Amino acid sequence: MNLFQDSRYEYLYPPTGEGIYCVGNAAECDHLTYDGTAVRIPWAGAPGPDELSRIRSLQLLPTVAQLARGSLPTFLPRLPAVRSVSMPSGLLPRLDVGNAPPGLAMLMVVDKADAPAPRTKIELDAVLPDLRGLMFLAPAAKPNLMDFVDPLPSALEFLHLEANGRLATLEQLRALERLRHLELVRVRAFDVFDHIRSPLRVLEIGGARQGFPIERLATVASLRSVRLNGVYTEIDCAIFRDLPELVELDVLNCNRVGNVEALLDCPKLTSVRLLNCKRPFDTRTRAMFRDRGFARLDIDFA
Image 1 (cartoon, rainbow, N blue to C red):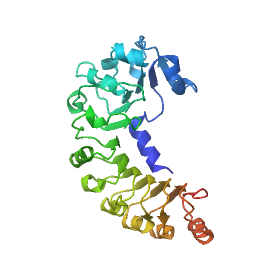
Image 2 (spheres, rainbow, N blue to C red; image 1 turned 180 degrees about the horizontal axis):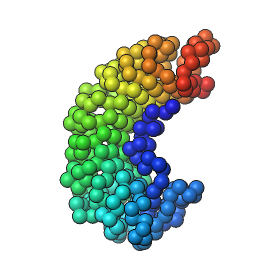
Image 3 (tube, rainbow, N blue to C red; image 1 turned 90 degrees about the horizontal axis):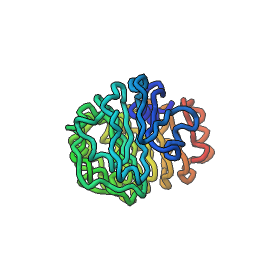
Image 4 (cartoon, rainbow, N blue to C red; image 1 turned 90 degrees about the vertical axis):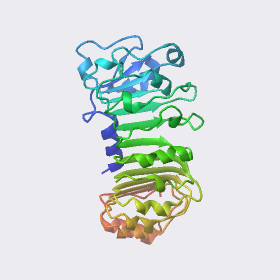
């Protein structure tokens, strides 16, 4: 059982794991093609006519030089089955209605430290009207997603956002009433719960500093899966008793976790993982958790 990963995979990749392609040089595509799960197309190449309908997930991996002088692959609007596309932010301004894949549901924006950021913004709602998922991954020093995507598409169901403690970024969450899976990274101490208006099923909070109001997690009562990673404020596990639908809890790299036995009072909780959390279990509580009979219990390295 892994509700968090299953939900993420459902949005990011084809359901069968087939139809994954990458466009770029061999070195850039190596991590995808080494085990045969993905098919590589050279940056200046194109898929054969019989391959166009097989592509369901496409990763655009140009080198810095290719990104600086290149453009989007010309075959993008001829991909009838593509569901997810990954690209560096520098390619976003080149997306328009005429060259975007029809029916694209998931966009991943992935930047490396040496990738140039775009200078113009893109209105994704207009270019990708069927977009339901958006993920932005970049080093901490890179610009924020909101620097080149504004506003966020209102129909999003999945969002991974590097908040970087920017209030203007978090305020856009108020308009996203269809969100079901939200991953907020580098939230610092902002009260993100003030801005969540949707009935979330899955939530990740990462990079929260001292003073982050973790006790307000209970305001999102619809949550089924919660992941906390690098939350440096104190976490009293009694707060999870106020999440009546909670099935899965992951707590990673959190140094101040207490009152873990309160998790035993969560009626639907069947999956518990704590890793690198300064040993919040003693011999007695560890035995109590093992006796409970969780479907997944990973606390040996808590």
